[in-house]
Image (tube, rainbow, N blue to C red; front, side):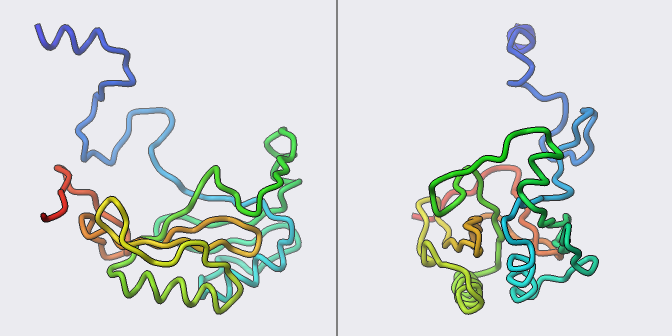
Length: 178
């Protein structure tokens, strides 16, 4: 009977796969291969990410820059060209920061959070939230790149990092010690 009621739920509420499975039978694989940030000043933003110490995949051109990240590629591309490629209007906002998304970097300790934020600030980022204890039990802070893209730097003691520095999420969620 329980199986029948589970089938009556919309498909978005049930999964045909094991929670730990990395394979996907979906035509839309569950992975991020490339993150593209639309930018106003490609040269300036490229210099910033080079100064962070991130390895470029190819030398920058007038049109695009690529940086190798653990498991994916970061691309910098002029915002107007990105909008044209997607056939949408260029979104202009009056805010200083782009807050519809954040990108996150997990590190192994709270000290590494503070060191990353300090380095980002030294090369021109704006620290918008200093490293601090987070409500979810970890430690995190945020910086904005020169064009306002928000990056969270976080230490999550409940998600160990693998050999590439990527978080692994345990099958059963850990709870903070009381």
